[in-house]
Image (cartoon, one colour):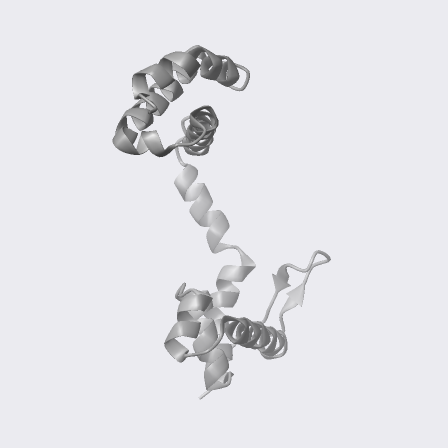
Amino acid sequence: MNDPLSLWARHETELRRWLLSRVSIRSEVDDILQDVFIKILRQGQSLSSVVQPRAWLFEVTRNTLTDRLRTRHEGLPLPEGLDELLDAVVSEHPLDGLAQACLPRVLSELDPQDREVIELCDLQGMTQAEFARQRQLSLPAVKSRLQRARKRMRERMTSACQVSFDSEGRVDDFVPRTPSR
């Protein structure tokens, strides 16, 4: 049986050394070790079914460290007035105007199947798997349908809105059009 306290006593020093080789701040190491210890205690009776407790313990420690690094939010305070500056930059971006001035027209001119898959998957955030399930289609069929619809929409936007691209393939300019009647 793997008793949590004896398992911890056998491996804590080794885990600490391993963490110190990856994290330079001792208080961070202590916090991570505390999280790992709590995870060990929460295992309760299921800890006895762990075949290689040392390997399991290192895996839990590594995952805890990874989670900690992912959620770390170190940063400087933002300067005052940044929101207004960002609003100005965003509102002047060509894609914003393109989306507002050209997208409704192009969507209205697309085949209903193309329009549906683009609106649901690209604009409303439905997953392709969910779209496939609801329409009783295979996932590869939906992926192909969406890819073809995007290609036709891009071609239509290029001609209907006279979209031009810069040397890196980004939208550079366009001529706004209203939806056709």
